[in-house]
Image (cartoon, rainbow, N blue to C red; front, top):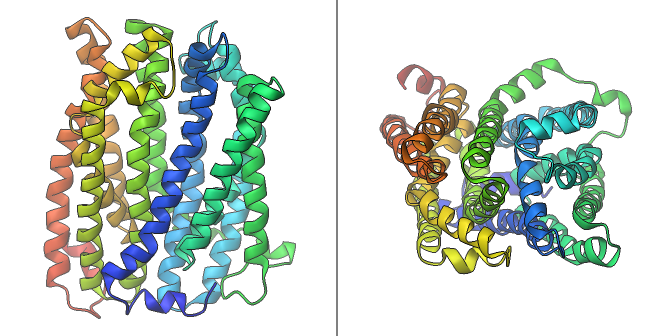
Length: 465
């Protein structure tokens, strides 16, 4: 880590910093989304099994969301703490947080792998797999589960690379995994004849290579933030772990809620539209996620800026970073809305040439995303509360859209409309209702930040909001 990097977060113009940190994050997160899309595109064109392979891949989404949830529980909290600690110039404790993250990721990764492998078939059936799609879902998920430890470590440490002042390296590592995955996918899927399992092998192999370089980066002795070389220093410090996990609880619950909701979405889609309806949702989800991941990139750019300046008690800069990030995020999700409404069919055609699946995916994309434009603002606001350590509000906003609004709609609307369209229409309704709540909390926070003077005790926020 460049010793000067943390300091610039408190002195450079916020707009400049946001470009400096967000652009690599955007490229990295867009690449990460393309990383998943590449698998789907290749899998969707497997001769004789493309549509069922896509459906089988979609069935694995809830289980993969659970894996992501545990990764964010550890990784996001650690990254946020490290940003604040660097703002306070407390490099020793920041290093302890980093070694803690490695150990906790290994523990959660092992537990997830064991549970998944022991109960693979019943879990996938619970998530909506049928006799036709279970072989494809199981083949893919078995490989992903075996490589889960490496996935957790890579994504967790990549977040730390970014939040500790080297967003370009984080971006470069993500781009490496995308490009190498795009090259290896056809080799394993088609040339070696491994099908959907080959896509999973390529994914894990690319992540292992990127992880190897990341570990080397953090083991360099000249880094201010570095991994210890002695095994005993990786013992879990439960005081640090408690604070880290508390901060990561918001995104953890958001991903866990997403898993629960996708489970019920799959069940309702199978009931009202069959296996191909799940495949359609897999395509729609991949396309929508492309724009969502760009917003995640903006959030990653905002996170070290907001975290550092909050730790340095420069509240005006925190507010400025939030407003500018929210405006850009809203612009991106507006583009996503326009693509969904006016280019749905050509976008879905990238993934499949099956006419029935293509029609279902195009209709689903148009019906699911009428309110996508306002999702960006909500995501940035949730991230801000997380950056400021306001865990309860972050958790509430994370859960309100999915559990409070979306889940009931999924079960109420399909019987009323008599078709799978009820599932699709549930999304814009929940997006709108949750955005209203988010707007109220965001306004209150901005008013309080505006009243605080730089240097004031941040504990004042907790009592006023």
